[in-house]
Amino acid sequence: VSSLAQYERIQALIQTGIDQGAMLLTGGLGRPHHLVPSKGAYVRPTVFGNCTPDMAIFQQEIFGPVTCLTPFDTEDEALTLANGTPYGLTNYVYTRNGPRRRRLARALRSGMVEMNDEAGDDGAPFGGMGASGAG
Image 1 (cartoon, rainbow, N blue to C red):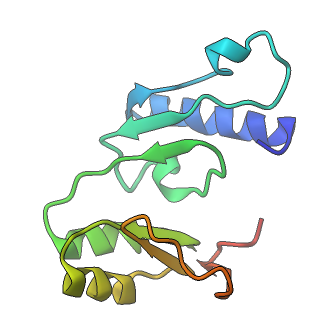
Image 2 (image 1 turned 45 degrees about the vertical axis):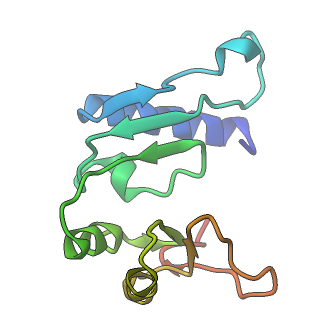
């Protein structure tokens, strides 16, 4: 990541995720094993499962290789989860159903929506909604 201060912030959020009961699926605290004893600001790619909207790792923009997986049953529930944070930089939609993909993209509150690994046009405006982009 960009600095040791950001590294420490991410480590604190990973610890908070563990403390709040998220299921650590891979990664975790510390530097990647092949880089230890490096003093660089390297973060282990980390995936949490069973995250809930009340968890800090669900609500924060972490800006590091950390993600939360949250199960949902309906499209409406997915939208409520995705739009239920103060941030809205980028959302990702994966579905073979074209009308669903477009419907979801219109309903998500974010600066960008990427669909099925297709990034937006390089000349498109860049930015977020809500508190995103405040740094």
